Image 1: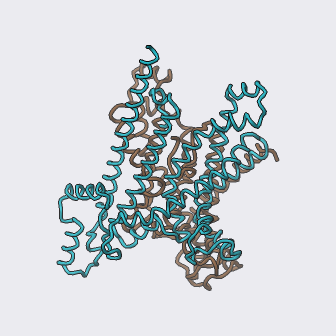
Image 2: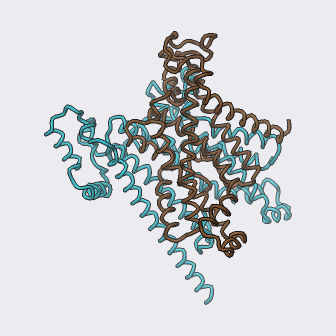
Length: 330
Length: 283
């Protein structure tokens, strides 16, 4: 009887937490929507003039303003914009380069390129960081550890927009190991360098995180207990240490995937790749507010969505969080 | 060389590099071999006696441009960090100490700011201003930077306010402002110092990224814009991109090394370099 009541209470607490998390997410999404709307409306001057030029005839300007909904009161503009977000079109591009296409179409065309880049970057970062971080932890305070930590500091500070051109010159132009981004070749080979450049800073951060996490777990009594039971060291490391140490690391990896979407803006420019960042910069260059608004919104929403999924997964993994005992991340 | 002495040497080197950078930025007009407007040299010359680091595609001296560029880098790096601190620290103090509605509001807004990863919001804000300048870039970076400081300070205050000294001060009749400013804030000094070092490096990198994207300060040559121009000319003249990138890299590295070392010194493993995660702090 008692355990049952306990179970029910726990389930209730879990449901409450998930519910509150969902409400908070909705509020944040609304905040993003409002912020992006306000930011784009805050641009000084008349968008219609900046698109058509100072000399454009008044009727044409008025027509464009009407098309863009700029002649409506601000509240109605926000309503119309929110409706475009809800129905999934994100509005129509204001510049004339994309007739008959919605912003959502442009974003959906660009999204796979950015996703594949971010995903490859996360994979490369994990492949570099897991072994390196483990090595550091198992050789704590030895020369290998110090050297690897020094390398991570360098990896964080090296700007991708510097490393990128250097690598392109050395590996693509001189040695022809990878296709030159200028040649426009698409494919897996052309993904390696951008993903490496984008993932390098993340791998440096992850290495430190893996190291700390493994060190934490190594100090746990159950590791001592496993060793005391005579379990071979290799098995202790793989079965007991790694499995537990990787939980926080995987969380960070999930969150960083979303953060990489913005890092991709610079990387896409360096490697002349299509993607969300390229679309955003194009929108900025031609002052197409609908594109700027749409891409920013999508990046923000993806970030929030990934955050939510990671948090919910965490609730599932760690029942202590469901009881509201720990606030977890600040 | 053991790890410890090597670490100290690198720390001292980094301090020296930052000191030198500040000095060169201040003395740029006297140290630079040419004026900022000088355009008379051979185009894309290789490094030599007349032009130590070569020249760019407009016949400007690269060393001169880098020296003047250090002013933009440091102005934005320190400027954006200080403004972020001035906004974020008081908000974090009040938020953590008072709790309740203020806390929910500050944390709510900062969560929205945090939903724009990296420099995305800064790109958007620079876009609004149409003509990016040093001031605009500082404003754009501070508009996102305060949130990290507010969260960091709030977390610290939540721990500190349960300490005995706060209770004692309150019993002695000290008001909220006095407790926050005279009792709690001084205890956060080491945390703030570490974060300051990381934040300057991070702001400097953000400025370079914005400049590389063509959204940085336009009134002065900046390292990021030189790098952007240089990257396009890399095949015929690698000098511009190499040296401007090196300047960014060494500066950011130095600030991060200093922060890293101070963090170890003060034993605060929960602080992270803001450049490591693109942004964000102590979460």
